[in-house]
Length: 243
Image 1 (tube, rainbow, N blue to C red):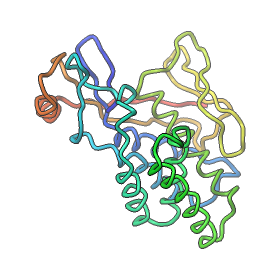
Image 2 (image 1 turned 90 degrees about the horizontal axis):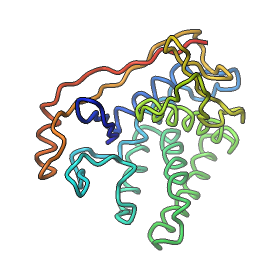
Image 3 (image 1 turned 120 degrees about the vertical axis):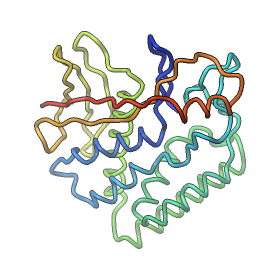
Image 4 (image 1 turned 30 degrees about the vertical axis):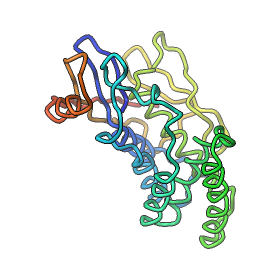
């Protein structure tokens, strides 16, 4: 979960909702050199966080507050679900599995050496991606460009969901795009957002994500949190981008 503190309590955005927001952004992100399997890439972006299960595991801090995903215990890494995540992506197609596999490696390569099982998983992903690229008849460069788009849209969605947009019309780096260029986000005085350089097919568009609001600040158990989330009011957060 993405957890933001507000004046009224906790704003909760589910990880899979964040992924859908990233897919919305990807639907508009179309530069001239971004032409390979656009729909499949959007599908991969929409499902890249399906590993996150909001109703499973521990979701409270020691003080009983909802646990933001950035505060999760990194020592609790379980490798079997990682295999399952990639396997389930393959049901949607090799291209989707390829990008999901690249994302898993991006997130976990820095932890290589911590667990032999993790090292085996990372090595297996390299083999699988080569097999999929060969069978799809695509180059590693094509795959890297598609994943760069995935990274940009994922990162931009997280910036929005985590309310990290800087004040004062200051630029914030997003990531490098499919062409290797750096993209930056800025919020104008009228609250519209722009990205430099502009990578979108439309001159103006709006994206949205659902957020749940909890007014209770502390919870005694995960079950109490889950029950509250299931009954919490839901609002739509939206952002308008303009060139």
